[in-house]
Length: 241
Ligand code: PGA
Image 1 (cartoon, protein in one colour):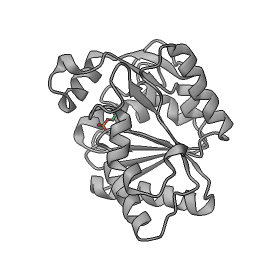
Image 2 (cartoon, helix red, strand yellow):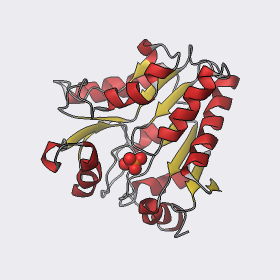
Image 3 (cartoon, helix red, strand yellow):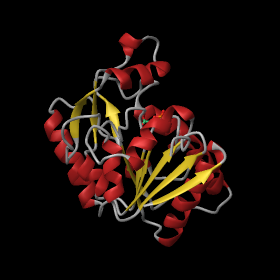
């Protein structure tokens, strides 16, 4: 486990983008695990710049997103499909056929979960997984629980996550109550994991993930057992370490 501290969230984004860029330079057909949320936006902005400047070529890259809301049309402005298009995919030369976000509207949800895990395996597994962290320590939508769930699964969102994500929606009632998420096993199978955390509202989750017991009550704590994990933190997120 490596922990890197930075002064600003912008620097966290630059560092993450440099690591992803290095990965793509070394393996042009890399498989990236991508995350949504506010935290990775500076990373995506830096990757867009590197792509525009001709430094990083995404034409052979494949991506798999961590999660998606259930019951939200993909064209809804708050869907993670929309987020990825707006924040990254429409600005870089990635082949959209090689980008994957789980289907939160599948009629057969269990089949969709199995299909998504299988698609990652068939692509050769994830080379680099980018993660944010919830205030409750979640990664993807793996919420605090009595267990770690291995594979892609349907999650009932906790009140804490609904409240945190309410800022993107018109009202709290409009926030979906369920999501489809990669499981902890699917995340831990990535060859490298880069967790990004910025802002003082993540300080408690980071402290619990890094310094306290490894427990499914803080799902991110399991990351410490991964052989190649980096925590890129700004000073505010590292404030309780
Ligand atoms: P955020 O979300 O980047 O918007 O804070 C992170 C998460 O909930 O995993």
